[in-house]
Length: 106
Image 1: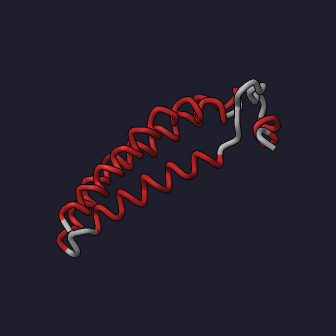
Image 2: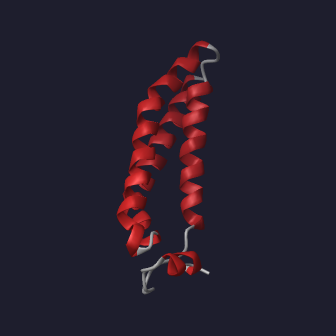
């Protein structure tokens, strides 16, 4: 079972690292110009809070050893899959107003 834990941990780290580069690029393109800085700031704050809380998930290993690996792996897979739902922005005009943002990607 040790190999399974290591495999899940490494796959989770791979997925997080792969998705991390796209976070700031996509988030900047998704928010309308008038609220872009606020949107990126709120997204960054949420990520920082997640980073603060993540070490506490390791404490769940006292309840069931594989639980932290499953949580981190599921979070990484979910994040990686959710980025596929974002609209394509290649060669598209970025939203400038709130109304443009609501219609972006439709």
